[in-house]
Length: 320
Image 1 (cartoon, rainbow, N blue to C red):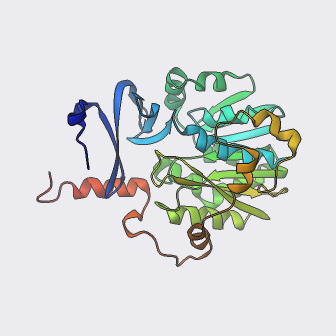
Image 2: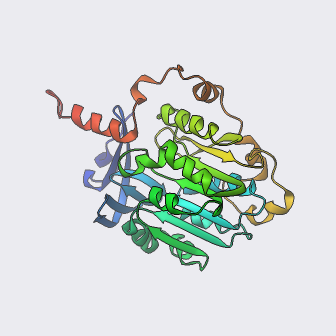
Image 3: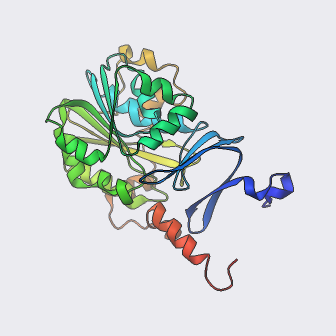
């Protein structure tokens, strides 16, 4: 039975709401608004919540939470870096919350991490309010490059990085270029021999067209392409995919035992889960390989498009 927030003693003014699809919402009660600032690109906000700890939102869409961010960041980072023989230089595209950088720094071979992040306000507020961010960004191996990440990658010399990790939001607005064929071509160019690209590729439940497109584009560029998945409860669809393109090792292979030690205190990744994460549900396999696979009808479109549609429908006659 639905429960109204006020019935459990929480005033409606203390709820954060994300319109995840035109017909579904995620509502989270928050204890305190930690920060809210309109940057040049977006509204950045951080909340303290009882259910998910600290929560980062961009334009009212959840980007990361203390409760489940590790399930996302560990699967974005570790399968890719474990497939690199020597991941000394790593590029993170996006990643302004610092979670991906934190996981990259678990690998002792890493000598340099470059973070190409659009919005300095995101990094500044996350360093102030997310418990891992200051330590991650303050590491002497980390260099921050603010601005258009696609232009940053385009300007880099060929063979600059051992791994590129694309921690991008949904493919709308400023982020849409980070899902384009030209961008992925530049990412491949800047990889060294044996390098690996890993890109978040959304949920096959809510955005199957994005998952399929990223997989198809990387198959045109890399000899080995794999998709792994994780479960991120606060993301629309929960089941979340990461697509990896490798110029060398198969990312799905069992990682060498000598590389596993520094990762044994991870909260999601384990050596056993590493292999299991690349075993895809049947419906995901079909949606990746069959361009005519049906979508769930109320989940079509990007998250931003669905939110716009929901806001439009809420103003229709008879709606309150």
